Image (spheres, rainbow, N blue to C red):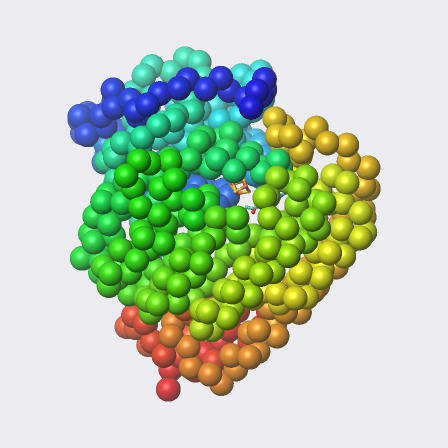
Length: 467
Ligand code: 5AD
Ligand code: SF4
């Protein structure tokens, strides 16, 4: 696809390990320096930030939660919708102000937005106070970028193709009990509204032996839960020779006997019967599937390039519900895609009424520069789109509440991962079906899986006790 606005991809087959951060003498350069990091966007970004933190700490930086006292501010950005872009530039305004008072403060911008050419132009023209810009493929080069004498914005962004070479695999993980594990990077689906294939690049799967090794290590460290991460996990391995399918990978992961396995995100097009069988067969694969619908209208699905029809989706949904015991299904839906009529929107509502999702993330279509959908004529008023979103949200919330209420007085297995920020006599965690529960219990139970009696149910969370 020829996209003149996108960064010219310098095709490389390997990550350049020109800079090996382990060689940087941590005491000399970064001792006593503090970094502050703010992360926007998806789990992939959250996990990238875990890598950035480990990398900075391996060379001597320390994390601070107070940006005013930091020597380095990093913004790990998201490009998926316009409001993500606005939030970042809003926050950059505060950083600029700080830099006026503290001249040697370093401001770095990374993540998906940093891979967009028009954003780089904007930075070079209007935001010259930003010192470093690095892409999702250049994380390991950050310490060296920090070492280089900075007198102008230092940009290190390129997209990468080919085999994934393991570099470092060092993470400062946010949780001691639940961990993210990348199984692949990028995406080849090119849904017409989506920026991800351009910012994150082509699909590149990690080798299964490296993934399994990481999971074994996590298990030995006491992790109870892992979530396999990819933009489209079902397509895992398709880009590798002599590799395994996602179902085979899932089965191998299940056999490590780690207590809980999750995976996100699944594209309905690549979801196989074999996958459903494996999920149903192993108790340690959680009965929870995030299955983005995007639209219930066949006309819109075609314009979106999703490769399935409403009927295909509903058939798949039926198979999942029938074969996986007590499974919860959640989804993503976009309203107001170009050319969406009231009838198309009603098709979406019809699928929601059919699937009665456990929850759904809903969005108004946001044109992303360089994607085909941004070029499509769009006559629908924003007001109409907002009304559709509101109507959809009301329906989605109704089903979330109904599904949650069904759990009242039942006992659910919950992995208690955090102390509640609202009430320190409560721990929080997720059920096997990914429902958030606030549990009144002894703090000593942090990090354990407990059978919790559900005592109250709201749309977005549950309350529970341990009997
Ligand atoms: N506009 C609105 N929503 C979008 N998403 C992705 N791209 C766009 C866009 N351009 C939504 C999709 C996807 C989720 C992560 O974000 O629903 O599944
Ligand atoms: Fe974007 Fe589609 Fe790939 Fe998901 S599957 S990341 S929506 S292109």
